[in-house]
Image (cartoon, rainbow, N blue to C red; front, side):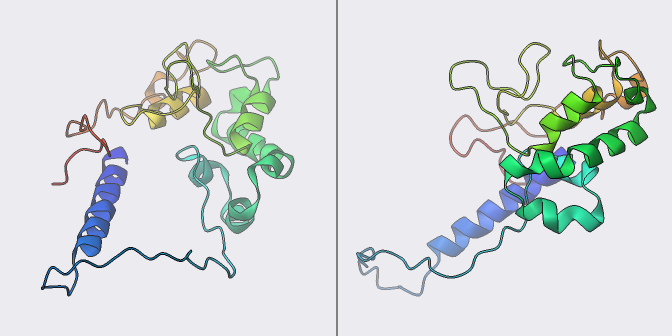
Length: 189
């Protein structure tokens, strides 16, 4: 899944860069930048929310997708936390025990409360990682294995050792190295 997402991002960027750099200006004439502000008036619609990868995909029911996607993050917990908890408990019935926690030390209500607010938090002073065993949801580096982390938090229990067959997607790294310069993605195929 990570490889396909990265490939899609790389292809989208390649198409965007190509379209931007192509023009019918074969004379190499200088065209000044627009000096007046662009008109952004009109009606805009939020199409998708994916602050945390796979959360919308796994926890939001098909009939709630449109509502979730247009609900501002500050209102998502009130609307979706209990639905997320129902889904979590269906995925891993151990979460029905209020004393059962995951590797973050969160019980089902606390964990789904964090998930239901679809915001990727970022630490401006510490380690940037989705989860490294110590730092939790302090950002996301391209190499972070977010799907295995999410599986571990759903199925792994307090130590991450419960249900070992369900806590890892078995994709240990990207298939190509990431670039050391912006936009940091791996080169396209």
